[in-house]
Length: 106
Image 1 (tube, helix red, strand yellow):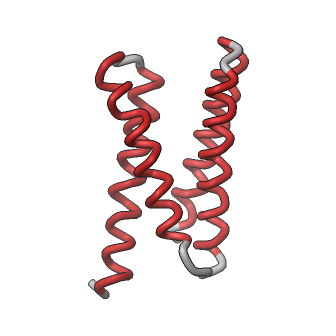
Image 2: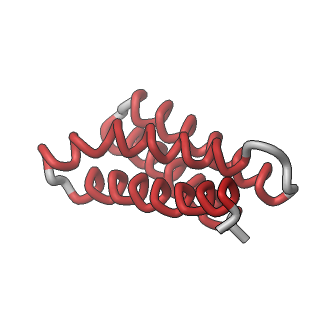
Image 3: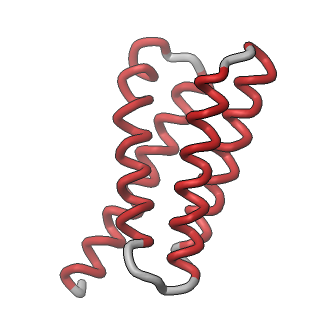
């Protein structure tokens, strides 16, 4: 069941990137949103098929998203930036917990 958050984050990142491009013609938003969306979707696929490294990929993607958007969210405090930063943080906490459980058998 841990693939559901990954697919949800994939959709949110992809839609957010597309909206950023449509509103402000920001190619960076489009590329970043689709890239993060693709990584989350692939990790969801790996998790759904019980393949190796699905949790690690989702955790790594969440950590990079948090590292990229966290400081920007704290500085700017714009609602969409804060939402993206919190999404990354939530994914990091969730998949960090899953990784810990899988690694140490807790």
